[in-house]
Length: 410
Image (cartoon, rainbow, N blue to C red):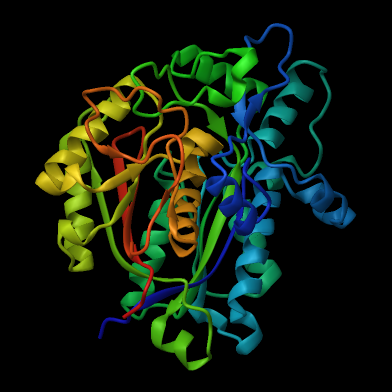
């Protein structure tokens, strides 16, 4: 027996705000959260999207502050919002049938870099808890410990597809009856000096105009110059739809499908064939046709080859429907959260559609003619009826993950 799966709670922290409500308001206002990064004198200028969680950090216990790298702080904050909305753990304990599926690409990058700096620059020993702070599974472990979730505890590290894979795998586990419910999503805190310099060395970060820092990320635009890094987390509560209805929980959407493929062609050059296959796989898994999809939140990083490849893949997957299928990339507003990107963009899509609008690709003044999609450009588009959406996540290494959800659980 296959169970239908509902999202009953969601939480988010990003450059667009410290809650899903703030995220939604920022998207509706077409606000950019990207700003200049305070870099060292030897580091070229850069921009990124940062959450502002100073108050939440100050309210943490001393023990938590010692153990929590920013990647864990973000995850804990988003999870608490999601659980509060869902009320899942207030109804009854789920024991070994409640799981955590979390994605991250870089793990505790701040703690790792601090340890290396202590050793190599200052010649001192790193702090005793450095390993526990830096390990990639720390956010998932802390969520399990804090909320008494005794089921599977998984950390997925699939570069920019990590959190989409986490949500998709949790969805399949609940649908197939292996678990009852899960916290699923991703967290990323990666804009350290070392990581930033490494990305700059690849020459794929957006060029920086200090007078217009917030406009650096321009997915699908003819004058796009690269991606912008971001930090934050997004987490959803997944459970069986029947169980949610039984306890009167809010059903924010129903997860319908998940597709995952590998390009198996190049470590950093994407394949439109692999991306098309992931979208078609998700459509088949969801038992919906291309014409049923109302909106795509594209991976849309703002790189030359990435946006062009995804545009071709959408055309190949949707055929003539691609010309009327509304498409946008919210990375233009909050930056690229790497391992948390898929989860944040899924939550952004869900929240916007429930609020009656499609989020825009900001700064898309002049679309690239080769990225010939139905772009939601510059400002949000109000919609009366847009129920089923797709969220794309495509990663270095050639990993592709696609999620499909429906707002009204019929």
